[in-house]
Amino acid sequence: MFYDKGLKFECQMCRYCCSSEPGYVYLTKDDIEKASKHFGIDFDSFIKTYCRLVDFGPYFLVSLQETPDYDCIFLSSKGCAIYDARPLQCRTYPFWKNVMESEESWKREGESCPGIGKGRIVSKREIEKRLKDNEMPPYMIIKK
Image (tube, rainbow, N blue to C red):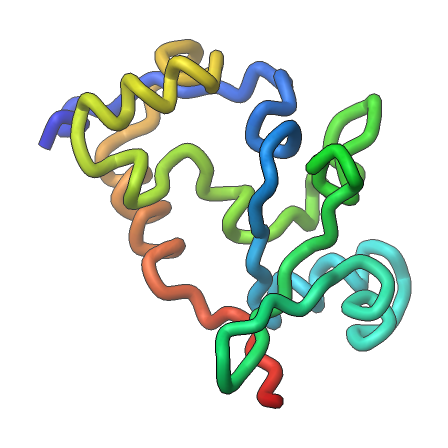
């Protein structure tokens, strides 16, 4: 693999992965539990206040809301308001399957993410752990 010796990545706090483009941050039950605890509210209140349901036919997946300009609802001028309780999808970026498919896709992501190629080396072992963690997470499903 092109990342056998690891890859440099360090978040530059540019906010790219949290803003500017529409998208989804799908949540697991664990993500919701951690975030609701962070705010001191119950599980259902967190979903009602901060989430949206994304229609997948026979069920919905739970995703974080976005602002009208496509920023994550938790993105503030100081950064992520729930950084210590951020969702799995956020914790594993940029080590997502579509980004790690090839060296070319990694470099292409680096055109938008200034943290790629900077900072400490993330080991192959850590990269593969993040890929595995984000492979098929148990997303929060709500049946119709």
